[in-house]
Image 1: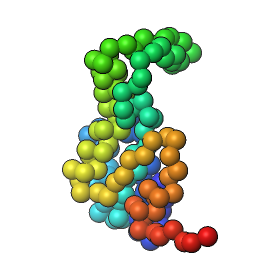
Image 2: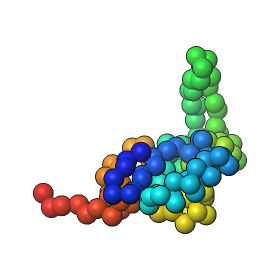
Image 3: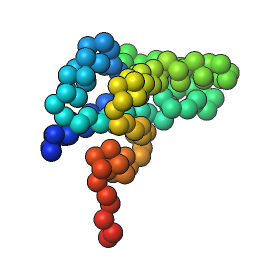
Image 4: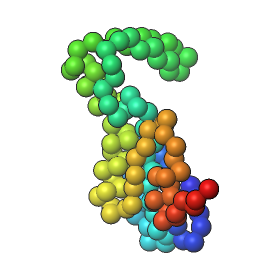
Length: 121
């Protein structure tokens, strides 16, 4: 979080967006201007190309085979649920928000949310 001039910028992948998070955002919004930057992996934003994808979680490695359009779409929807949920939450609360992928330069997105302007170099 970034605090300053009664503004808060929440940067999150959205995987902790639940009823408690909603209430905390409402409470925080009573004391500060809240903006949300949703950060998502490119695989969460668009269907992956067909192929085999290695994943590791909790020390266990597996491989996911994504060939059909439906497999790739279902995978993107499941993987992208957190970021989508946070974007929907921010929008439903009337908060300023933006979404970027992990490969993007966050400067412009953060600047737009905080109302800053890029200076000429």
